[in-house]
Length: 432
Image: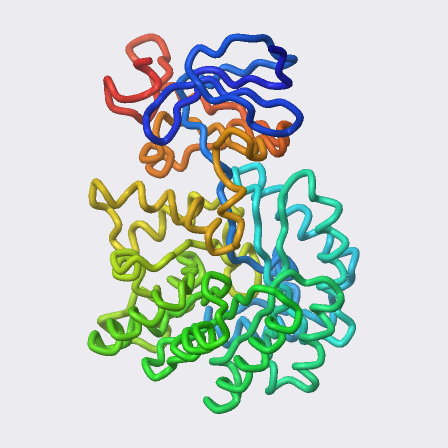
């Protein structure tokens, strides 16, 4: 049989080495020593071949805007929001598209071929939204892009916030957003969630709310999200992003809450880069790590994913959109370093993120599914995380969309230089 593309000697996460064949944009065979020819053949050389990484939470309308309205000198979440409010009047559709496109290319070049971006809709002109709606279509051959209508300054606390949120859905946003903890009062926060859920039902959209992104242990809007999800029968379609206050809840309340989160089939997205920097700013010592209870949520059977969140914007001045950086940092902060725990971290930026985004049924390396995959310069997922391995080849619907040359490092041995890899003898690609 003739194929469009065959990847030989591909190492799967379970350790099997197989050949992977692609035809008409889909995976048509995964087996050892596959017979047949292809228009293009790639030798993975025993390297890890994985489904694409997923960015489940970012802000492409704000990407690469750091410094446009002054720098966030305090490094706090609140100053970040204030700087962003000053930045918005400077935005143009062309500039937002240029910065967002470059950021998307950064993500894709490092293996993230699925992105969910929140878009600030507290703007009567919808500059950022219109830019990203256009861009979503223009980059569809590179990444799958979901857009969340995000009321950054509140649904009820911003003039006509509810109207703007609904209009954003009519314009084409894929997901309903909210930010209850930023509303002026708790009562307004609860009401804002009900408005968001009403819109999600009316327009048949999933919901993804920034929720309890604060160190205040009395911020408990995630319980409202769980209750509304169950009441409306929206299990599996709702995401609570951040939930950093959960790290400060007392244990008795937290473990009661876990039961309701599981019943609601709520997904939680933690964002290690941003939250490790933005949270704990009012602490002296001991200083909180700033993330939600990732390990405990996973142990309870609740779906959790990691997001990168910001890339050079008023909240986070660093980053390149590398999801392995976010995963590596999260591994440390939530202490997922046990031998059986490290592979779970890979799940947090792949399969778990796919569940959170509602694409799990069509995601993964299986015959019949879209030929979307990445070859990493490592033998295993552990090594890829440990070494922050580059994505050597990224394939979207059977088409190569990004290529990176494997780095070559040499050290002097006597009078000559010898190539090395950061692997132990007998365990790495050096020895295969």
